[in-house]
Amino acid sequence: MENAKGRILIAFTVLLLGVSSTTNAQDRASDTPSLSARHQSIVLIASHTARGDLERLTPALHVGLDSGLTINEIKEVLLQLYAYCGFPRSLRGINTLMAVLENREARGIDDAVGATPTPQVSHEDRYEKGKQVLEALTGRPQNRPRSGYAAFLPTIEVFLKEHLFAAIFGRDVLSYQDREITTVAALVSMGGVEPFARSHMGLALNVGITEAQLRQLLTLIETNVGEAEAAVGRDLLSQALAWQVDRGDDVGGREEGDQQAAQHRSSPGNQVANTLFPKGRRITSDNFTGAVWVAMLATDEEAFGSRIGNVTFEPGSRTNWHSHPGGQILLVTHGAGYYQEQGGPIQLIRRGDVVEIRPDVVHWHGATPSSELTHVAVVTNSLRGATVWLQPVTDREYHRFW
Image (cartoon, rainbow, N blue to C red; front, side, top):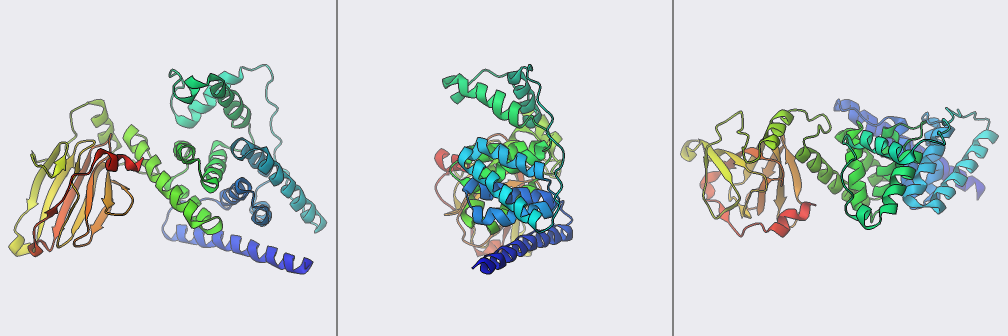
């Protein structure tokens, strides 16, 4: 029985290493910066600890130590997790680490202890330090009046500043990136805390974790935790990215168009014209909600079998539900918007995205609530028939993205 357990442990460890190697190879092939082996291990340690899955946590700890995590770094990960998944699971994770280290020492493995945490100053103002840490994480001053739960129960807001952000995030040994990867992995794997997972995805983006790296994090969760958890995480990431675009932050290397977006936000009601093609005329039609401009670029359907138009949506504007007998292709050239097929989730679309819409698929598209959207719309095989317009997209349907 003992040998069988050992074989299972070794096999699972090889599986984890295989995930890491495959992911790295794929990322190198696409020239996309990937999570380091160290960060991938933090994802797995945080996920399994948060779920209380000690059977999977054990090999994840072995892989983490082998990938370069020090003992003190893993201690910090497990310490931080008590704030998110409670003392019982944090303590069980710590006990599991102790057993793993004992096993490795018995096998003659000398693991690096790593840097010792710097003692925190006892007389410092913890609340002010928490505000400073939160300002570094969010990139925004923390001087707004209390609202929501902070106004309802001010003590919890004090605890968050003094304890979570000052006493935990304010510790060294782990970087802010390390801590946000830990937090996102734990919250997504736990489930049931979606607003907080989405919020920490935004913080992760703010401290330099890229969109590609967060998607890799979710792939690791899909492989090692569950498909459902990863699917929810991907929806939350889309929402976090939309929020970043709406407020003008640089997300995941998509710097292009940010200056235009900032100009748009600083001039309420003054829409930014697309720089590639004419903005065209504002259309009046029951097939759209809000202000929409269209400039037709190619209309000779007999010669080309297609119609091509440049379409600009004001924030909050969108099409009705509709379909095209011959299909449609959208080339997003500016801003951020939504696209949804009937029965499917709302998807975030941004500058550089291409949306392929099959014939007769019922769908809608438009801008996000705070960002203009411009796309080139190519109606393919247009001689098959005219656009089939249906009912408007209700406000409730439109805001389901959030």
